[in-house]
Amino acid sequence: MVTDDPTLTNPDRYRTLWENEFVRVLEYVDQPGDRTTPHDHPNSVMVTLSAFSRTLSAGDRVFETELPSGHAVWIPAQRHSGENTGDTPTHTILIELKGAAAGEMISGALGPVT
Image 1: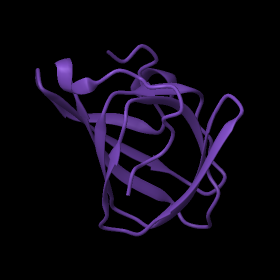
Image 2 (image 1 turned 180 degrees about the vertical axis):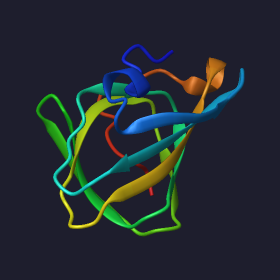
Image 3 (image 1 turned 135 degrees about the vertical axis):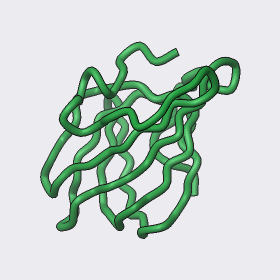
């Protein structure tokens, strides 16, 4: 269950493209230097539509990532905030799982699993 829904905490960056009882599909777009406020994601698959560099933060933990365009990665359930640290916009699609597949947030989970 998403408590700090990114479409509510960061509505200028996230929008719902489609949703049913099993999944929710989000689009995320930002520009270099843009930041998000803390928000939650259930277990998700992220598909990159652009190459980007980001810093994800959760408390005192920081995760740096760089992903190419056209890449799919697993995102375990987590809470984070992010910043576009590159010189290109970020454009991704997130397929968030619902129900039992949404998973539980595990302490230490931060960033995608490539």
